[in-house]
Length: 256
Ligand SMILES: Cc1cc2nc3c(=O)[nH]c(=O)nc-3n(C[C@H](O)[C@H](O)[C@H](O)COP(=O)(O)OP(=O)(O)OC[C@H]3O[C@@H](n4cnc5c(N)ncnc54)[C@H](O)[C@@H]3O)c2cc1C
Image (cartoon, rainbow, N blue to C red; front, side, top):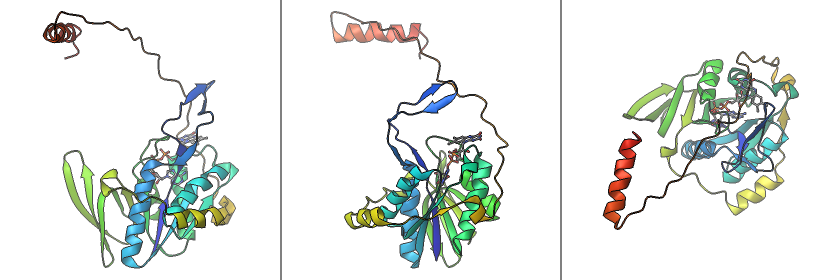
C-alpha cells in the first residue's frame, strides 16, 4: 500500500521572528521539519510496516524544503518529492491543499495521506481537511492512534473532553497529534541514505494544475504589541509574611 506523508519546512521554534515593514524574517535561524510532522512521519511508517507498504514524503516549498524531506527520508521514508514553483509564493491554505492533492494523486495509487496537526509557522491547522476535500477523500483528524482493518482506517481522536473512535474507508486523509507517541530518531543508515538521495521537484505544469490565486490575503503582519513590565520585590521578616503580602498583592491586582 502506498502512503504519502506531507511535511512542511518551518523556522526552528527558538527562532526570533522579526517583522519589518510587513516582511517577516527569522534571520539566520535554522529551518527544520515542522515538529508535528515528525509524528505524521512516525504514523505513516508504522502503517507501512504493518501493511507492507511504502511511504512517500511530499513538501511544498522552496529548495530549502528538501531538508525537511531529507529528515523524513532519514527517519525511514522510501522516497520524497518536492513541489516547487515560483507561482506558489503567496498561496493560501486552500491553494496549498489543491496542489498537495494533485501531487498526492501524481504519486500513483496512494491510499492514505498523513498530515501533522498544524504547522508551527502558518498555524491554521486546516491543510489536512482541505486536502481531503480536494481529493474527495474522508478526513480523520487529530488521530492519537491509528489501525487498519482491511480497507477501513480506524482512529482514536484526541480531544479536550476525551477520546472519540472514528473510522472511514480508504483512501483517506489522516492528521496526527502528539499523543500518537514519540517519533523515531533518524538512523545512521537513514541519514547516509538521505544525504545521497536525489529528490525530484515537480512544478505546477508537472502536476497539471493552474497557479491557485489566494482567496485569503495577508494584508499586514505586525510584531506583538510591546508589554509594559514592572518588577517589585516583596520583602518581609519571614517566608509566611512574604507569602501573605504576595497573596494580598495578587488579590489587589485582581490576578485571582
Ligand atoms: C511567503 C508566503 C506567503 C503567504 N501568503 C499567504 C496569503 O497571502 N494568504 C494566506 O492565507 N496564506 C499565505 N501563506 C500561508 C500559506 O498558505 C500556508 O503556509 C500554507 O498553506 C499551509 O498552511 P499552514 O502553514 O497554516 O499549515 P497547517 O494547515 O497548520 O498545516 C497542517 C499540516 O499540513 C501539512 N502542510 C502544511 N503546509 C505544507 C507544505 N507547504 N508542504 C507539505 N505539507 C504541508 C503538514 O503536514 C502540516 O502539519 C503564505 C506563506 C508564505 C510562506
